[in-house]
Amino acid sequence: MPAWPKLERKVHKALADPGARVRRVKSRGKVFWLKQRERPSLRFRLLKGDPARNFAQELRALRWLAEQGLPVPDIVAEGPGFVLLEDAGMPVRHVLAEQRDNPGAQAATMAAAGRALAVLHGAGVAHGRPALRDMCLRDGVVRFIDLENTRVVSAAVWANPARLRRDLIAFAHDTFKELRTDGPAARAGFDAYRAADRQGVWEDTAAWLRRNRWPLILTRPLQNRHNGRGRDFRAIPMVYGLFTGHG
Image (cartoon, rainbow, N blue to C red; front, side):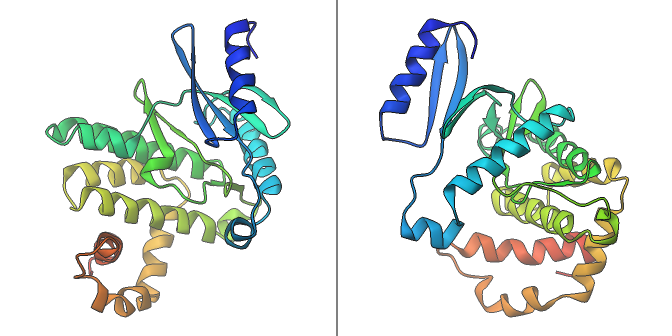
């Protein structure tokens, strides 16, 4: 941890408080994020597995990705059950909401997000859940957070690209869910990914979706729902339209 006594006191105070698992800590005009290990419960273990193992996996991912120069926040300090991270910026989801009246800015944001995901995939890394809320923008650079599901795919990644394919589908689905249209901003993100995709992940994903249309067919009765989950289902035909031309 930097030799900032005030920051250290704030971190220790936050660790002593059993409240929120992720806290914003500010010192000397800089913002940091303190993340603690989940407190285990039966429900949590059933849904997400062992919290200690998940936390250790996230720390390993953060360290390795930072060593490779990949877009993640730097670790400022760590200890038993906690890690203090530099601020990665505002989640892309929130940035897009603030840019709602500025299509050009939205397109630039999505292009940065698409490039960042392609860079991650180019290193053989699957984020596991690259939703726009887990991608943060600061100074024009998108960094990834919430890395509990991140995996470095094996050296035989291109013979077994399922994790990267799932990543790209998740990114496309969440983009359509948030933007609700296949407009210029969404296209900027996808075009940026394709331009930086050196491993053929896009083509592999398109081929897989052409062979597997059952998610599209099975969810058709739900795609016109207007409740809270309706946006999830309505994004599915847009994903198929993007990759196969038929949604």
